[in-house]
Image (cartoon, rainbow, N blue to C red; front, side, top):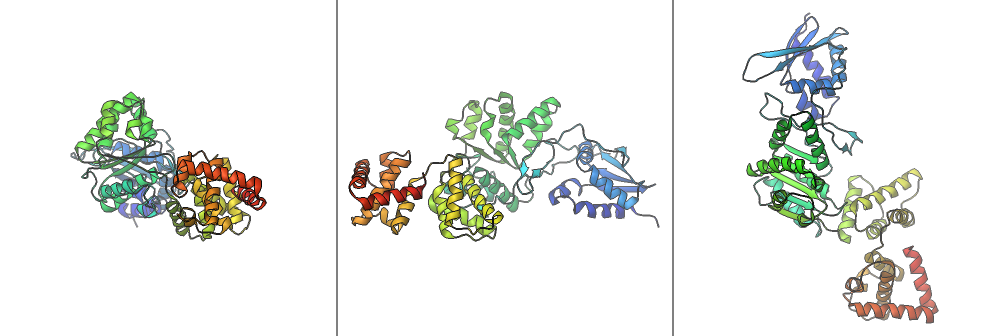
Length: 478
């Protein structure tokens, strides 16, 4: 019985669908139409020359296997390439399997970041227009785990998160266009940028969302200059509905790239398309940018992410553990949150180190294990101990609630604990006396100086007090 071309291609698609990501399947295989099957040659119609080259470049092995499976060893594939959708004429290009093994095509795929979920690089469509299609389908490059659900809100990030949520509800139509999110490393810029993109896609499935790092954007532009197709490059980016550019500060000093980004930015903004940028500096501190581009970065909202407070850090750790289905003693979580204060990425890295040590060495996760691992981690990252952590150690030593040390009570044991916290904060941190006083019951710098003198005097005259100081110092492990 003669096979039908539609049946053969349908069986091929079932195999292909099980072997590639769903988004890639929708982008590169759903638009294909089977045309005919003659003499074990299956002809499929693809939208453009670029489409054909992409299939040959990225899915040659998979296509070989499916064609062989359905048509046997002599099976071949022929492409019917659409030159113009308005015309019925089509140019046919034949490719015989298994001889085809192309690795270099006219349009090179752009370099993309590591997929942290799979640990290997991913490719997305080259930033060029596919002739014959009104709108290109683009993989957004968004990481599903970087969602709003996994983003812990606190005083440190409330403005930026609220603006991001408003954008996702009405992209391009709010006053937050562009939204520039800035902060030091490891505080959640990239997470929030992905969360905005994911929410836009969820609310508006038909909108094209693209996340790209600025260094990748620059590399793509350089490739377009080399291949003499800058117009296609610009046109591609002008079609994006929500463009998210990470680490925009890397464009500094790149005059040509700034010029092309300026035109893309203008086009998107004028057409009410949403732009989200991230940077490690606020706009006023960005150097090496053309004034006309810098002024546009200031059009919308510049929102910073600050260092999270203790409660937020604890909530971040608890959320991560809950998501991974892992239980950990609260005192370990609290110790970790006290120990690493200025970089969420480092804090999560220390958490992973504790879990790995426990699993590999079959050890129970307790405070002793946590201290050993975190102390190494903090030392290796040359991280400064915090006033909050010192207060925690002192309060734990005297078995008193943390709130007591910041209260106005004049009870001797509490005053003594407060003085010790001030003493160790002056000794082991770089904070000013005024800052230490502010964190220790809202005292002034003179009170801190008095506390330090008192502790030094007691160490020399009170044997028991000297033991307190020595044992607390050991617990701090400085």
